[in-house]
Length: 145
Image (cartoon, rainbow, N blue to C red; front, side, top):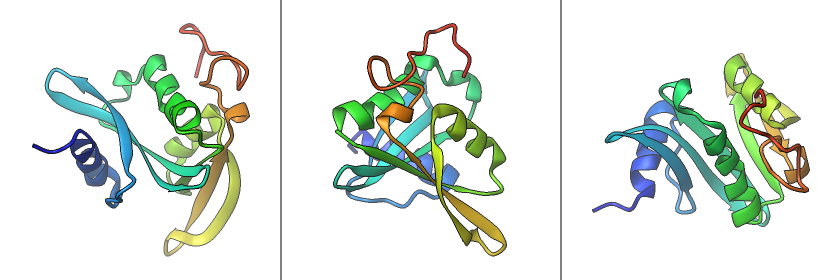
C-alpha cells in the first residue's frame, strides 16, 4: 500500500507535472472515493518551501481548506517564506495567488516556456490572508476571497 502522499503527488503530477521529491508533502480534498483537490509543498530549504495547487472543480475548495493550506507550512512546518512559480499565461492562478497574499518576487524571462515568463511569488505569514491571529487579516466564512 502506498503512503497517503503518493496519491496526492500523482494527482498533482498528472495535472501540473510536479516532479517527485523526497520532501514532498500534501493535503487534499476527497469527495466520496474521488480525490478532487490537492495542495503540495516541496523544496524545503531552511525556512522556505514551494507551494503547488491543483483541483478539478473549484467549487470543492472551501475557506477551511484554504486556511489549512497556509496554516500547514507556516504554523506546522515553521516556514518563513512560501514560494510559488507560475507561468505568466496562467492568469487565473496568478489572480488567486495575489488575492491570497503572494507578492511578486522575480520575473524570469522565458522561464516557463519559450516566450512565456515565469513569475516567482513569495509570501510571509504577515502577508497571508488565510491565517488567523496575529499573522494576517482574519478571514471569516462570510469574507470574500
